[in-house]
Image: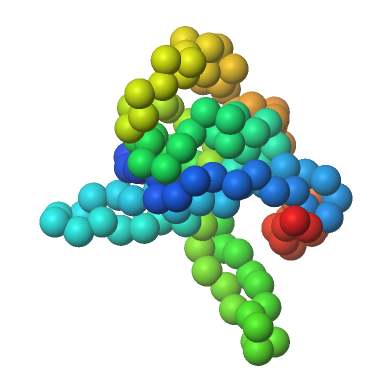
Amino acid sequence: MNNVILFGRTGHELQLTSTKSGVNMLRFSLAVKSGKYADWIPCTAWGGRAELLAKYVNKGDQLIINGKLRPHEYTDRDGIKRWDMTVEVKRVTFVANRRDDSDFDQDKAAEDDAGTDIGQKDGEDNSQAEADGGESAT
C-alpha cells in the first residue's frame, strides 16, 4: 500500500502553475520535524486541490497531508535525465496558520475540501498531467 501521512509547515509561498495542457499544479515543500532538525519533503497537488491550497495556504502554515509517494523524472540543465520522489497530495487538513488572518475561514476551507479529493474522483489518476511529464508551462 502506498500511503503517506505528513504533519508539517509549508516552507515558502505557494505558486499555482499549470501544465502545457492547462492542468493546475502546485509544488511545495513541507518541513517535517525529525528530532531537532526538519526534513523537507517535496509535495505536488493537482487540479482543484492545487487551487484550494494556493488560495488558503501561506508560508509557515501547518498542514496534515495525506498522499502517495510518486517518482518524478526530469531532465536537468545539462541534459541528464534524473528522478526524485514527491508526495502526490490526495487530502489536506488545515491545522494552523501563522498569520493573523481574520478573513481565513476554517469552516469555509473545510467546506471547500469537505474531506474529499477535490478535482479528482476516487480511482482517477492524473494521467493527463503525467502525460505532460508534470512539467509546468509557467
